[in-house]
Image (cartoon, rainbow, N blue to C red):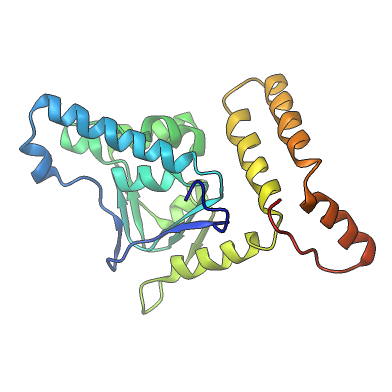
Length: 222
């Protein structure tokens, strides 16, 4: 996906009705020794980092349970859409664990430190409506009879992104992600570097020409 120029948006969804991702199989985990557990969690953390580092926008379509590592997967995405009936939570502390695949870092960046601590300390699950009101998800929708309302909304969101200039979108994502980790002066410098990369692109020239000619732009990602 990282190197496929045809990919402009990635939507993560589940093939299992009522479940986005319920996290790790604790029965399998119980059979592991300490070293195996550490290796497993490290691999999982690396996977989430790879998802977060994808250059194109990513959307999690949460049509059911997103618990533990499942919510960490959603947090690794840029955008989240949830059915109002979906259940989300970092429930690791209820199992004698703590989030180990990015939850302690991405949740507070998403909802703030205070709420993140409360949700992690209590292991509480919240539904899609509360997740929306807390800023955990971008959109919430009533579930439909097919059980894929969040996926349908995610597709609609992806279709809003698709017509935009692909390289500019990628640079926008990079500037936001890198800038959030540094002070604002450094972030402004990062924005400037990303903007500079976009200046010589064909898409920027096409965007300006389309505006002058009062027609829809035809972006090619170059």
